[in-house]
Length: 130
Image 1 (cartoon, rainbow, N blue to C red):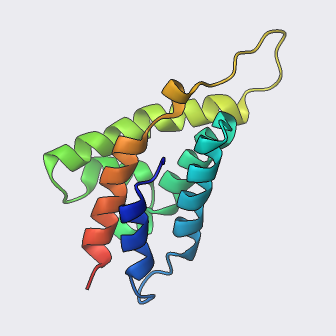
Image 2: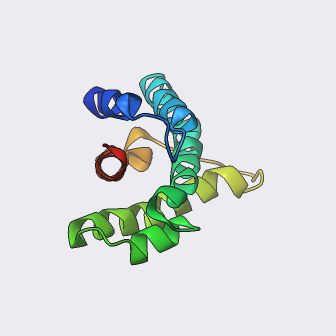
């Protein structure tokens, strides 16, 4: 799994109060499907979509703000900086580069941000769990 099944279950139990997690949960489910199906271009795009989707949960406007300014632990910030710097750039490379004479496709290694994604989702659960 790309997203830990236990973490996904935790997200599904959070009531819709301030934030509706329906889209976040679906992004996570699609990340799993695409990773299992070796659709790594889609994984890169969905990872980018996920980090662009969640900043309001952290009272931020952008994911860069989450990475740099969130009140979380130093370890959390380092994981988020890695997502911001690496996952965003890899996603951009696959989403925004026009056709070229020669191409390479992403590999599982290139798009595997599941550890940092789990840290992010764990913090979301912690913040929204009542």
